Image (tube, rainbow, N blue to C red; front, side, top):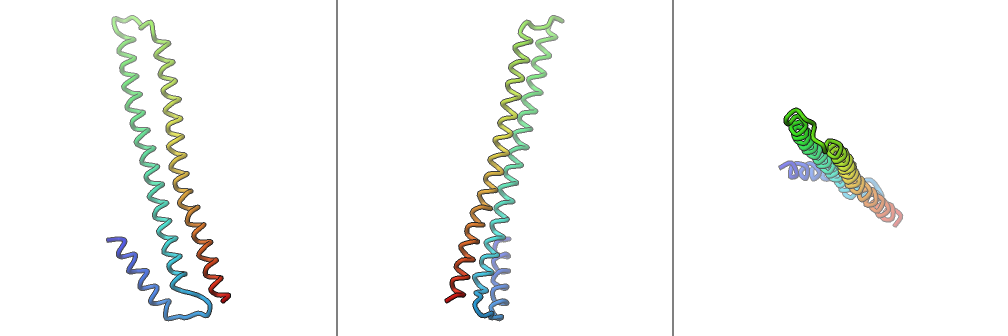
Amino acid sequence: MESTRTNSMFTEYTKLFGKFKLPGLDMGALIESRRKDLEAMAEINTTALAGVQALAQKQSDMLRSTLGDVQTFFSRVTKDGQPVASTGETVRQTLQKALADVQDLADTAYRAQSDSVAVVTKRVAEHVEEMKALLQTKKK
């Protein structure tokens, strides 16, 4: 529904600006270019939101897992009032898992950012080509 409202809005703008003919300027192409800019912005926002949601989900999963590990560790340590002999190994494994989790978070953040940058880069390249085409038609 939002898409049809947006398309109808751009149709109305195209009709309105079409009445104002400026020499050497294709208002339809200019408006179409701005519409594509807005679509790219919407895609960037969607990509960024997906990245943030993925990070939040990973952090939630990591917290749940860590709390489970801590609970298991303390139940083993306090069993019979005697510390478990492998406490050092458990701490080492926990630290390794924490480092792997941090790396996973960093990778997720990087992917989210690179996806958003890719959308922007693609739109900028398209925009440059559109402007070249507009300027070439003006010269002719």
